[in-house]
Length: 390
Image (tube, rainbow, N blue to C red; front, side, top):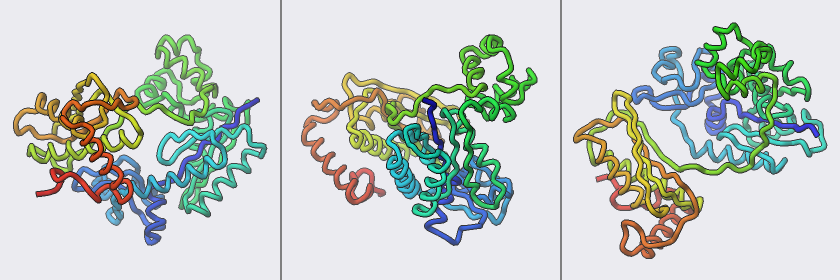
């Protein structure tokens, strides 16, 4: 049986959520992101802002030069996560075969639903718009690759001043014909460098790529060449994966101004270690490897890691390992631009004496009580005294 894969993408998601909470923003040129005087970048921008040439990942300072009247809005990720969960719940009520690939994007396998795919898509778009007040675009095809590209084509074909509400169906058997006229860099695996190399061969469209000898693509690009040949013909046999194995849990921050003070850097590490530990325990996971990430003002980036003999989910163990790594690589008074801490080698926690605590059971009961309070009343309802400002 031919598969039917639906790809859904929420249009200008962060901006759409902000408009729900502040209707005065509707129709205005605004961008969600960091402050221009603190190296902020545009996370999302309204369609009015896009008409001014503003794009995601653009430095906010440049966006303001392009559009001096641009309204800047700080990101509120708690609101976005909440809205995303509402959308994903709606998708899972349609089918359990849902693969969420980002906060605003998902694949659905609707092969077993005995209803016209376009009708399913229109009803889904309408429900998300009318009940959650969020715009979306949808692509439908026999596989994930073509469905996602169909969504992108639908979004680009929008001619109005607002969200495109694209809906594009690629019938089974017409995948290669649909892809053929599209630029080659719309294909997965074709980044700027590969696109430039293809252009040197006079390969500009996906159709050009599909007509190129597969053996030569393999010779030039290795195994990626084999994938390029298959994808250019619209072939993709990957299934919708409802669960992904979590590889690591991490936190990082880029300071608005380079930081030299030991106390500030160590306080940041402690806060991030607490959050990483909390997320580990929430997922009933522990990890054996603690990794520290640092970036100096000249953008030199390095990582260091240490591996424990037994997995841990304890904030202090994560912190002490990160501090030890920091002291090994950072010179006195050396400025830091970015710092991050993460835990990998994840698995089920092993309850035993802590590496750093003499009374592990008492410490664990305290930690569980803190987690319960923070989960019920919010993350900042209670915290360790050493995390408080002087």
